[in-house]
Image (cartoon, rainbow, N blue to C red; front, side, top):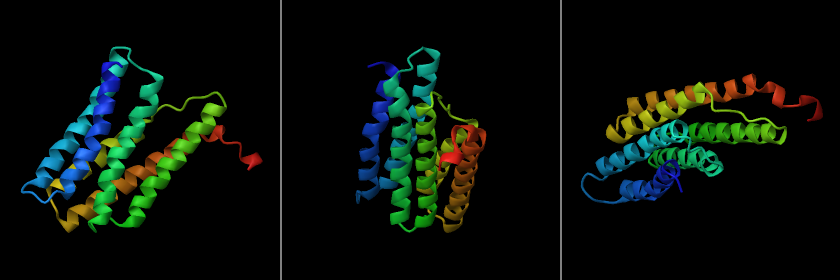
Length: 175
């Protein structure tokens, strides 16, 4: 297993640690959870850089890296829903976008095409991770609303962009 894939797996291992810290009734548990979330988020950027820069791109990494990202972000967002700090419908929008883009990519692969990650998707991931960090750091209703808005706008925009730029993948006549 190469370095990039090890970092991806570290991110996966950090997810339950992050969740346990969110629920653990100890002093500064939110600060500890924030540190783990930041560490896990940073591995996302580092493993991608290492994979591309040192030619460590693998099929395992192509599959596991986005899955690890989604698991990390979804676990945090689900906690915010449970804590009453993010509306469930907002979480549904995020989940629906992920399923829709994944379905589009699967259809593209079936047709011999690979859909690369778009910049809007990278911005969505980065802004969502920053918002999660802010929400972990500051429990303020106005900040929760602002972060939910940023997450929703970037999520919807990037999802729409994937479908618009790759509309030729879908054969609408056979639906």
